[in-house]
Amino acid sequence: MNQSADWALRPTTLRFSLGDLVLLKRTFTAFHRLGHFTSIPIDDFKSLNVTWPPEASALLYHSVPISGSLKRISFGTDSICYVRAQFDRSYVDLSGSFEQYLKKFSGKSRSTLSRKVRKFNEAPGAEFRSYSSGPELLEFLRLAYPLSKRTYQERLLDAGLPDTEEFRASIVRMGDAGYAVGALLLLEGRPVAYLLCPSQAGTLLYEYVGYDPEYRELSPGTVLQYYLLERLFMEKKFQIFDFTEGEGQHKALFATNNTKCADVYIFRRSLANSIIVYSHAALDSASNLLGRILAKLHLKTAIKRLLRR
Image (cartoon, rainbow, N blue to C red; front, top):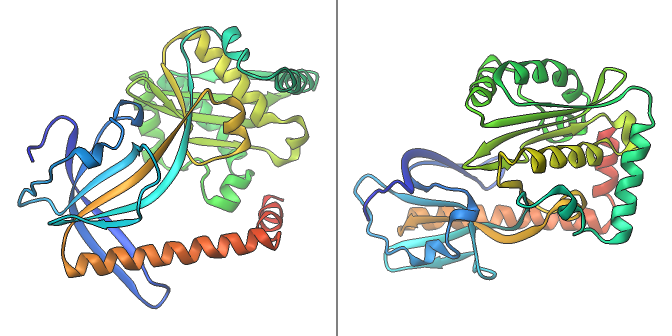
């Protein structure tokens, strides 16, 4: 296999744990498949005739489109194929006009969306702002950081805006190059919802998002998404708004397209790698089973609600 513009060689650390007492850790030098999932052929990993170069021990495919459900672990002559995750990936096709986009909603959904937007706009000092240049995004971060610390994304998922000089510098660089967009909803000058979206090859990614739980009755996340999409359709700067991995009512409401994808890892075939792969698969299965049990006992939602307060 020859390295091409579609692959990057990099050292990648993969951690596979059997629990608190045992940690299997190994560093692989891996070829990572580049490109947004909309530009990668379906089942791309299956078409590759793997000829391992001396310096590579793994091939990584992130969000490769797949034609159907895949077996978790399979073996080739000299390789192990480990499907770490399978998921839906939703996105909005930004071609056409915003008016045409709104026609994809059912009459009931359009009415509900219009009602939420109208209700928010009736609140005192309702305002939408968007940010794209480096200096603008620095101002966006200044306003969004206090809000990020109040969101359940920060408290529950540790997925708020990173508050570091390195992160701020990277966002400013992306803004100066035209590779990022920020958006805020405010009430009387106070931010109540934010979105920060980096871009990749003309695609805007739903990366950092949060809203103030104090204002959840005003649906600030939904309203902010509505206004940002309206702006993106008008500006025609990006081709796709990608909601990234996972499902959810928000994504199902706004998306125009849905693609089945998978994270696929291909390792050199060996006993050690087999142990690592099976160990990680077992841990994942146990974690998923626990999640299903909590959901069945109606504890999962209760725990999330408690942490959102």
